[in-house]
Image 1 (cartoon, one colour):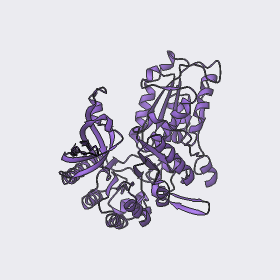
Image 2 (cartoon, helix red, strand yellow; image 1 turned 90 degrees about the horizontal axis):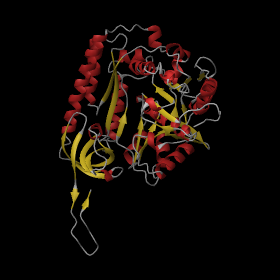
Image 3 (tube, helix red, strand yellow; image 1 turned 30 degrees about the vertical axis):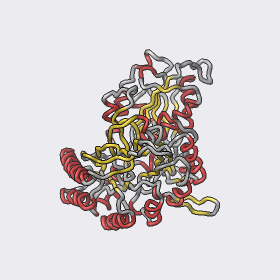
Image 4 (cartoon, helix red, strand yellow; image 1 turned 180 degrees about the horizontal axis):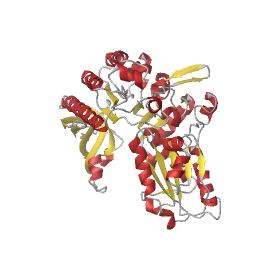
Length: 487
């Protein structure tokens, strides 16, 4: 295969490795779709690829270490593949910039979160000229807010079904960036200022996805419920946006993540309650149950604010599941502060919580002015204590659902079935799907149920999963042709 430059020969095989959040997964889908238009073909084996991309995350230190380790394993790859191009894209690229070239001199291109549309051209340039390519957005302090925002392009031109969570599920970015500036977080620097996409463009994208067979869309934003956009003289909030495409034919379920506690408005909760396709599930990070820690994190709310929000959620949508995030071992966190976070989990009994040990991130306020003074072993102990508590609560709440029946949107073979190397030629397998309240359910069934909604009775559970059986209904043969139906 040749690129636009006749001298730049390569085999057309593309390997891409993605770490981080759903936003990164969507970015990878869009980049792959663009490269396919230039003749590239995906491969799951990095050893086969003349083009290797790493889509990176900077939120946790561990994610960065994984990328640098993966890059290290490619140190001598070009000895066998002189036309190989290795690129780093995403949040780590925007944050570390030239540092990546210093740590991994064999890297050919570094591309920030706002320049993903340039990747096909940058790859061509790197391969033709054998010169390093770097494209990044402006830093928050380098120009006016508008100029910085303009340098972070919302890149949503193409979609690629192979890169989605499943053939029936897709992510839709409704906004980029963040203006909250929590002291521990790099996202305002790596993703730029908060910007909401046009409702018209979002509706068109959802309609296109539904026409391609997508049954479930998840709307993405760093603080998704902060969505605001004025179009044709009308201001659209998240509730208005969801209502504008809710009735799209073929679409069955709508989710959105991640929510910010102070922006959980009543109109949004009423939309969750009243619009049948909207999942009764909200992910609303608390981060801590201690007011002093929340203040040091610059989260913009108190425990009482969070408590009031939770009461409104359960009053408006009584069966709504809520999940949360917590950081343990943040600067200055005492055992007493940690216990307050534990109490918050006991009080609100979250469906699940994503629990992280604090790690200082270069460029954040916490790293600049606070001391990372909680020992690693203390962080590990608090992390395990919180995880044990959350698992105990999750298992108890799941057990209360044994004997109930739920409509499940079937996503496909379960992780266990895939891990076991389930034979695709055998139709019967363990399937996985989710309830409207986003609880994972596994059950035995035919692969053909993937993408459909089926009724399942819950027979057992673990802390993370409901285990069930398909509910069958028998219809007696009649003149109108009634037959037994497998739900």
